[in-house]
Length: 239
Image (cartoon, rainbow, N blue to C red):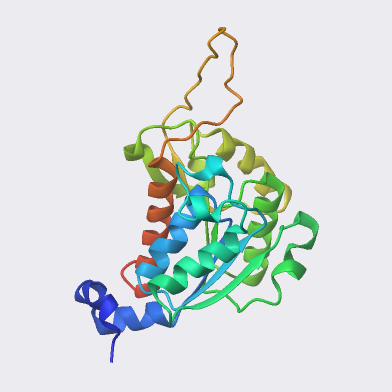
């Protein structure tokens, strides 16, 4: 019998689609503003097993955008907090959560002990680690979708999916095109914004464009869109 908490999902996906999601394993790398909200949407969507990886702890500055950020979680490991949130939503969801920093030279070893995922979602910040994850997925024939930059952007209607080679306006995507090529990866599906990055000035007039500001809705919407893409793929709605 299907868990009643997914009745509304079943209305859209039917029993067969929901069963596919409940049998699926999704790996979320990075549990910041994008990744934590993505993980929450995945468990609410019926994914049966989540692999949650992050090396950081919750900071008070995360409060404006991260699903793991509450006053009582400040200072706690994001991976541990996210695992608790997942189980609070669906106790039957299997969770493999680890406080782990991914190093570009040891990605394969770092990820070898986890259940083989049906999909990998890259929400990490390090450009070399992102490239190494893409190379690992290519070597292991694992479907991958990667998040590009959500900071210094305001317009959620400018978020879109694309091959990394076709991106524009996104500073991180520009860097990642080069980093992916370095590790022999030409094609990566990414979500990015076509909105030019906002540049702001300090009160004294000095350029502070290298600092990354975020509004409450942009990273969560990007995370929700990533979850939606993966749910549609795994349920059979999209090829």
